Image (tube, rainbow, N blue to C red):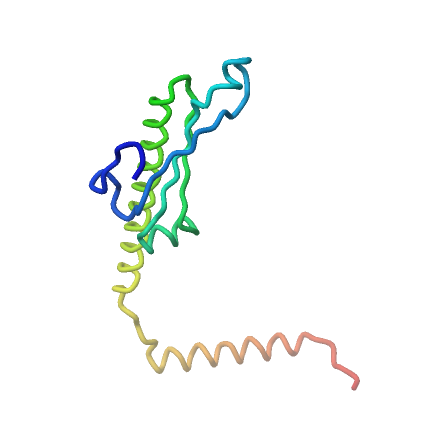
Length: 136
């Protein structure tokens, strides 16, 4: 863990968080171009559900204000927020899947199936009678 972060401070399912210093350019002139106050937070995921959700083991978030400390804090908060939203989405998907699995399956009664098939045959012969005869 970098920047004094302890294992307990990490969100569940995250193996490691590290910060990349950058100067992303843009307005601000010489000071903006020479100071590396921008931070990009990277999280290495360990939870298989999160890895599947994000499509890989790395998640990033960035922040661009004048203060390096403020940027680091914002980037970390954004990253944790992304991970928590992913957890909520995964939990919701599981609930939907569980409800779907609990729905009763209903077998079609034999008489209803026979009527449905007879109707299909009748409809098919009606359509066949409308077609022009084929000359083979």
